[in-house]
Image (cartoon, rainbow, N blue to C red; front, top):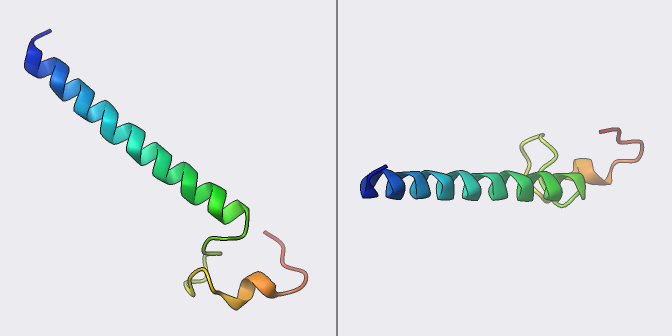
Length: 55
């Protein structure tokens, strides 16, 4: 493998790692109730305070 091929591989792996960290962060925020519930109102949504919410 040439030097440019190794550099390209490192850059691609870095981008993939950053993307995975972002996705995991969003999933953790959503499951803990600190993220968007999916209704489009954002993190200050009133849906998070409804009794009987089933997600």
